[in-house]
Length: 422
Image (cartoon, rainbow, N blue to C red):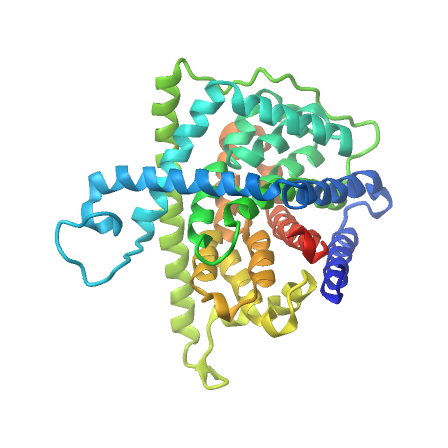
């Protein structure tokens, strides 16, 4: 049954759309059809995955696949790093029963999934999945062919890999379409990172793998809607048509595995570098303001952002008693990436946070919308379409804002669902 918390989530959805409309470049051109289509697509996907008969078996299969990938990855990782991995037989006794080292438990998953994704692309499995979602977005939200294809690609590929799929059309995209591409890239995550997030949350959130997968899928239409509200398409400017013969190609299955692994290595290095730098910068800020005592504890950047995002978390459907902790997680995501936020969410004991709040935060955190990704977006698009670099720079912070809100919109959609769905 619907509850007051469901109505609270609906209020949050209305506030998100309203704020974007107030900041729109053209308030008279509100995309009613697209926004309604995005909300309906999100709700339909959530109901389809979690509400249909037999959904438990599907979710169980997804969880089993994630567990299998994790076990297989740990076998390869332990061969290289031995006891540092913390799983399986150890060469000598360790002082703890379960060692969790991010570099050895999470990052290697990205290498494996990146190689597997390249292989599935070469075998045309991913191409057909992307084509199906592209057709769905064209029909339900009226996107142009190139935009629909890029949005669909963002569900499974990264925010730089997906523009490569439509590289031949980037210089032909309108300003609104280019902005849409940036927003969706920041609102979603790559397939290579989904499994890592599910692994982090597996011990504290039932069906974690299913929730992470759905979170990335439904944030794509949310990003589309908010992007079009902020920068509407002008009249007489139609979307660029695109075929599905992408420039992303591999010569053979072995070539796909090798190049996919190399691409995954670049992602791993980038994630590691961004985490080191931004965790260090936040720590530096905390050292500088730590002399200020508030409520008996030193002031930190995370606490300040937590206070700022407390009402935001509440609007997504989180009970007020847990909104402070949820707001703190949103602040961690914005400043230190969603990886750090997911780790903090996974470290919260099951009894210290309700399952509803943990589930909603999984959706709210599942996106690349953080400060570090701004640089990645600018760098990647500057390489792919250098003539539009100034245009990208002029829109990137607005894209970060829209991408951050898109994941909150997804959380609000889920929060508005009857509890019986899950």
